[in-house]
Length: 340
Picture 1 (spheres, rainbow, N blue to C red):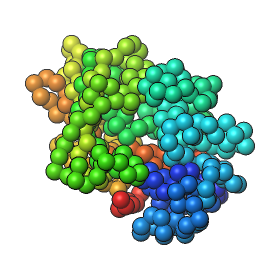
Picture 2 (cartoon, helix red, strand yellow; picture 1 turned 30 degrees about the horizontal axis):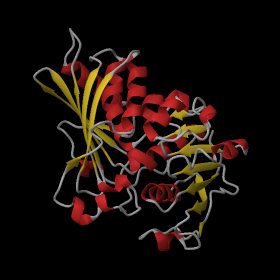
Picture 3 (tube, helix red, strand yellow; picture 1 turned 90 degrees about the vertical axis):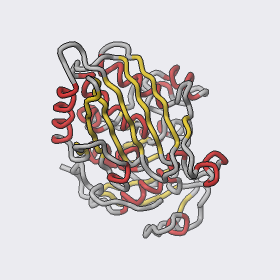
Picture 4 (cartoon, rainbow, N blue to C red; picture 1 turned 180 degrees about the vertical axis):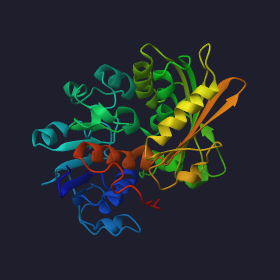
């Protein structure tokens, strides 16, 4: 049974991901948002820092969550990890939306992110929290590591078939993301004139999100997986689209993958099977991931779309917290937020 009310703080509240988290928690029936923290907007009302918000809490500087029972951290890499121990020691549940605890091996974190992990001993304690794939582990965890937006779509497309032994372990993923995935801080590469009417690949030699994909794919397959992953930046505000190419093992075909994915969608409130490859616009502002499997000459082409700030970030964070705290999985997540 869930407690009557859980107090929550959001650190990094005025970035795109943190702001989305604040908006979801504000309408959550069992969570009271008690503190929003953000260095750049400290001293201002949240609604002044985030256009259209009805949340009028004053934004505090620092990372002190006050009397919160659960901390949602939307902070730059290494920042959350530097404070998680004190939050956990105070008896709080921590929901981390950065990459700090997605990798179980701190040496892998150092290789992919270029810095030593600030709390390497906590990496094994964290639970990778893609709810549809890790439901049992999340229910008993105090440190929830929320997957990246690209891995959310990509792993939903691949892990079920790998677990079931339906497909080969050589996988190709072509993925595209809206500009909000880069965050709210200004940078030349994401200015309107740089992005508009243009599509570009990036991280082709090895995007950081590939590391967590390899970790989870190997766990699903029970052996090493060969992954080619190429992300692209597209001129939209929100959206993730992953197109995944899976080769069925001998004796299996795309129809088996289709049946498996239909069953997965039927059993999860935030997954929807689409009869044709879905568009990102069909899930904008929602916590839904839409999935389609199409047979192309014996290859199962799996298309997954999600909102990178909701199912690919803050919505998934609240969904995982709901499971951990004993709320209905859908609590606070049935609406849609239009900003940005």
